Amino acid sequence: MDKTEYKTDQRELIIEFLKNNTDKYLSVDDIEKHIFKLNKKIGLTTIYRFLNKLEKENKLRIEINNHTKYYQYISDECRNHFHLKCEDCGKIIHFECEEFIKMIDHIETEHKFSIDSKFVIYGLCLDCKNRKGECR
Amino acid sequence: MDKTEYKTDQRELIIEFLKNNTDKYLSVDDIEKHIFKLNKKIGLTTIYRFLNKLEKENKLRIEINNHTKYYQYISDECRNHFHLKCEDCGKIIHFECEEFIKMIDHIETEHKFSIDSKFVIYGLCLDCKNRKGECR
DNA sequence: CACAATATGAAAATGATTTTCATTTTCATA
DNA sequence: TATGAAAATGAAAATCATTTTCATATTGTG
Image (cartoon, rainbow over all chains, first blue to last red):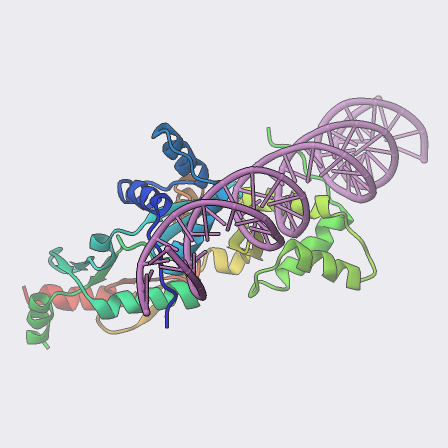
């Protein structure tokens, strides 16, 4: 029942720029200027509308500075890639998890709390937990 | 070499309202309306200026919604009161620490990362750490 | 091709926040 | 308690990022 999406040059240009800068926060102004450098032009309104759309879809991290919003595209890779760090042995475990993403989305949309996908979860790895169990 | 601060009725009214609502986020509008209910009046400009001052001094938590800023006063109690939770035995340790506050202020002002004073730090308490040591 | 849904963009509107500036208040010192 | 410099106030105007409006253009399906 979702609206059909039309593919347009404007959206492709914006998405491409965002995807090439997943390490930066970009303002509407940054995006407009970049498009301009490519000798193209996209109406400000269009940029705002498309960013709002992406934001609703949880595809952006947002930062606000001096009343200006800055956007960062959350790369797919980043979206489902997390780090566990064992407090005992220091080992870092990479993991991917759909449930986890859902939980994060929930917190972001419902609780208005923006979690940085780069965050590290502390705990104990299986080995260390087992070792600890032994001394009880 | 700091500027001398003058005590004014306006500031007292605003601070009082903030301090009585450390569990809510208040907008400039909320503040103005509250003052109005007390049959007093404070210019919007004054409210904005004072809040900006408090913000610079790290006395407020900020939330932005629909282009509107919401402010929450960080009570003294809350500012230097933290919780440690032992991952092993689950014990919760309350502690107060000036150094810790300084570190948080640093992160907030320099790294633009707003830490919720209510956050919990996970780790191991002394007892559990010792117990663990024994089995090595 | 045609048509309905969707997207675009220029211009105007919005609205929260900041600036300006003339006036008032505070408080230390005489 | 009078004085004055520093600080604070507030009305009005300005700012500026973002949203709305609306007429036009584009997309993709049948």
